[in-house]
Amino acid sequence: MTNLLKYNQAKMKIFQLVADRQLQIGDRLPPERELVEDFSLSLITVRRAMRELEEERIIERRPRMGTFLRQTLSKMPEFGKMLNIRICLPDSRDNPACSSMGQKIALELQKRHIRLLHRVTAAPELEIARTASECMGIFVTGNLNGQWRDFLRSLGTPVVVIGGNPFPGVFSNVNYDMCNAAADCHRALLDSGCVRTALVNGGRTYLQSVEIHRGFMKAAQERGLAPGSLPVLWPEPAEIGGSLMRFLREHPDLDGVLLESGALDAMLGCLWQTNYNRDLKISVILDNRNAVRPFSTVRNGIGAYFDRSIPLLAVERMLEQLDASGRRVTTDLIRPKLYHQSGECNILNLNLWNLCEI
View 1 (tube, rainbow, N blue to C red):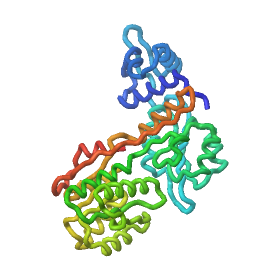
View 2: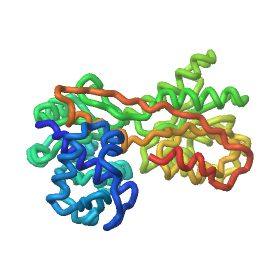
View 3: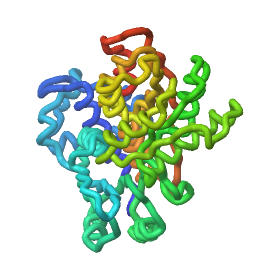
View 4: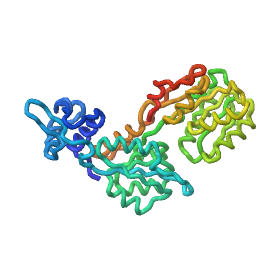
């Protein structure tokens, strides 16, 4: 895979600037020296990019007046394609086109005029290799194993893994620090006076859920709690409602529970349908926007959230790989922040909303 030429980087950054500032035809672009400083590229590189954009009739230079936009974003050229692979379990019906993460990565790439292709598969396939051969880079999410490791390495295309990555020395990785998020939430529950806590997690096959469990147990052991005394539920998404109702019936004395974000709606539904302990303290790891609104109604709730954008950071790391003169493997583990919901709050905290956006 050839490196991304510097002047093409400059052109992509100009397209991104046009998108971010919502510039229209006839609007003035910043002067070259300002672009040099903002882009951290040389004046020669920026001038070549501007010259090519002028030849492509995308911008217009007017002597002693400046540079002006001449075309809409939709008519600007495409630099290339990237591939988003969602590795699923053999019996999964997952659809990456509906993935919030995939959509956000696509929007970030669209600002740079790179098209993102989506593929979902349980195992490496020849068609995936053919598609990858036409792409500048590959984003991967899902159940990465040794077979996939060898397949992806054989393609010779830069790879960024989003989420759980069992091969951190092989592929660049962008992920949330779920272990410390769970540990912080569990400590907060214990500090608030809870003595009988539990974890309602995601599926056992997801590395994210494994990290949440590890963090939950880490905080418990710090406080001298025996792991066997702490109830843990590992429900499958399709059966979470019934599993959670049975779990609450089996453990009527809980006074605190930590939830993986996907379990929040089901937990609120179960509590609404039952007469379970109304003083139950709920803590949630808020890893996406959908979890924020229902959490705002939780009395004295505790949330761990992440204020950096995985899609934006993943795209930045991919472009850095394309620009790197040699092989470069990076790891970004986004640390959590703790949020305490005060009292009976039914109005969304706008600061939390903004910080939780990914």
